[in-house]
Image (cartoon, rainbow, N blue to C red; front, side, top):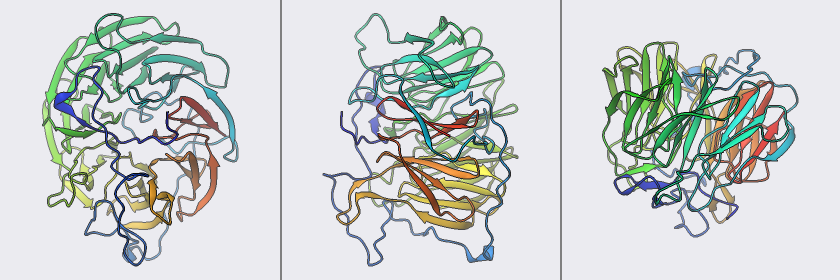
Length: 448
């Protein structure tokens, strides 16, 4: 397997079966990608936005307020808590790599690790590229249990993606083979399995006795967490081209907010699936076929009555949670989940620009350009960034080049760079004073 493997893969959704290998394209460049013509200042946006991302002078030189860190014992959902808005996590050390361990099969052309680990019950739960779910002790040690979730019969031999979540002593898993399942977190024994009409590349969110997951056909499923029975569904606009990612809905109170490949973000009642509002984070007049992909690949965040979500085609929006009215929007393309703390929203764009925005206005406190290419001079080998995570007073991001950067959230300055040892396409998570990175090669890297 190549050491450099793209996180973003574009699938012809209508042609997908549960096992089919999706057509894949690396949309952000590579050694054999077409060259770009750089302007005089050396910067070019892959989506060519007319709204340039730059510091807003209206903020008068203010810096973001960063709340003090708190002890975060668990990371039970793909996005941390069910609203995808984790607290500023405390750290036990000075951001050094303290462990690297093999935890499963790495990604290949026919299989892929696509979801973050979840941490609960003293364990780290990981779904590897071979659709094997394993439990490991949080503080190191051998595998506690593992289960091969691939079908025992049928022609399906490979599956792309899926994810895990934890609630009430069970691990819930969705699979590119086209099913959702629940396993006992202590023993790994399967409790139930429900077949779906389409593969599920997205990770689930579990809340209020329901499992919420979005299929490749842009259908949101609400399953009974006890039995696996389908309680209700919502069909969004099916999109023929999408980003192969492990996004997941946000749940806040009686509301579930789901992202879709069409660029739609939809709010529904958790009890019955009644739609309350929908917003389309799409931009007209895109200049390339890649920039016309509307997918919301990062998780929406529901916090303090506001939903924050970003699309690949170039809209980051803050939306009133109840009315669906936009509070503000910026021309910014991202495949990542924003991190929100204090008065700031932190997000990294598809062009490697890390920025801190004022939460109520969307104005930029600062903008930092992270490394964009392995070979900056010849503009070869586009680098993808994932994160950020706020932990120990710093922002943590990782890259497809195998680096993790530690960034000052008040200024955007890169304080430290760590060599992870392999490409990372999955955002970091934090629990028990540690940061965990899952590499594309199936290694769990622990930072403390």
